[in-house]
Amino acid sequence: MPRIDEVFKKSGVPTHTFVEPDEYDRVRVAIQTPGRGVIIEGPSGIGKTSCIKRALDETGLAESCLFLSGRKQGDIPLINELPTMRSIGVVIIDDFHRLPPASKQKITDFAKTLADEEDTTSKIILIGINRAGQTLVEYAPDLLHRVETIRVGRTSVERIRQLIELGERALNCSISISREISEEAEGSFAMAQVLCHEVCLQGKLLETRVAPEPEKIGMSLPAIREAVLADLGPRFFPIAREFSTGNKLRREGRAPYLHLLLWLSQTQEGALDTKEAMAANPDLKGSVSQVIEKGHLNNLIANSKTISELIHFEAKTDLLTTEDPKFLYFIRNIIWSKFARQVGYFSIDFNSRYDFALSFAGEDRSVAESLAHELTIREISVFYDKNEQHRILANDVEEYLAPIYRSESKFVIALLSKHYPKKIWTKFESEQFKQRFGDGAVIPIWYTDTTPGLFDESRRVGGLSFDPSKEIVEQLADIVEALCKKLEEMRQVEAKNSEQQSLFLASGA
Image 1 (cartoon, rainbow, N blue to C red):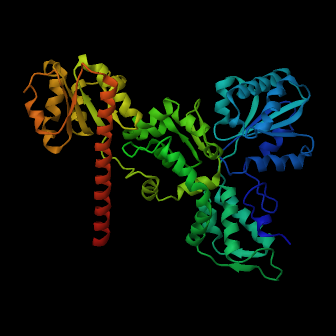
Image 2: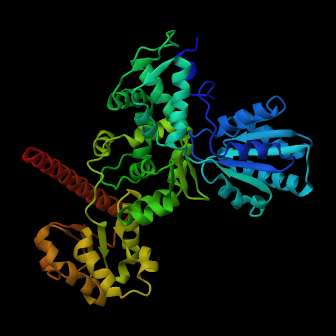
Image 3: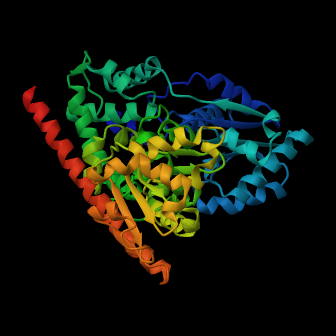
């Protein structure tokens, strides 16, 4: 008699509960077509590999094909050697997106050669996550016209219901919340298996029930969800925390890695177009683009075995993807405000476009640029005019700059050198933020070579000193440290106020 782990399988190819995806017939025909390569792409957990293996079994090709994986380091040398071979039969390369760039290039060139030569004795089938085909275009732009590309998308509620019915039939049971589970799985066969497995486990149905009538299992979806998340938490919480903090937890920063994970959790298929996400979240674009463009995101994933097993970033397509449907389910059900505090951040909400806006004379640009650079490294959002020249182009400069200094930056940092009062633009900028002195939003940095009394108004608030005749690097390090502490303290106060307001509103309700 089948056990629940054999019916509702939490991993591996299903036996009792295999349901053909919509694209199954296309896949079957494609793998039988001699010579022509095949690309099968789609999100994790929707049955791409199971679909291929079932089609190979039904077409009698399973015994004669070679199955390799870009995830297995031991397979990569053989994958690299394939282009030197002839009459290789059917070779399937799973997790193609995980191959090193050089290996991808070799395989795409090889697939193109096979197509051009119309070699009917060799066939390459590539399986990858979303937009694997688009990645191939980067290596061989004309390859996609020579291969069959099949995209397997998230499945329908009806097909997941079919999976559940097959499992119910195999175990001789009836799951009362089957419809709710069909929707909870959000198009993932894999998550439907996990959820149904938990239902049977809680219902103490461990193997097929021998009885004339199916055993009814009555459970609530919240109870099942809670149990599944409790089971997934010990494995996935540490990985989510490691990713969210990046190389170092910076409480003063804008948590770019945490926001990337948050945005990933909100995608339908576990694939985030990072460029689109940044465009939709301009307040976080600076800090997020910094970790991507500087290669920090790539390094974080590459240097962590646990993260790289679950998360993949393809720089050529700007796609951040998760490779485990259970991990996607876990992060989708995180209470993000609570998770942020557990990780070490005070909050994930920011009520200003920039943390700091720099105001300075042209003669002091080198200091301003170094200051902007050091703050940006700390995952802080900084307005520095040179970084936004492309946005300022063709705009009315005064209309563009005025709101930044007036209200869109949490703090204005004014580099008050002897050149500052002589410049038109610094005069314009100071006119915008002068009323903010009383709000504690202006941080003056006084140059020690300025005339005493030149900036008397600024002396009413606390500021920092800078000696242009001394070593710049060490002074800037001290200034950055002070600014970061100020920002961290501000974030802590805002988070506390927000929490108190939420409690007040809740008690009033």
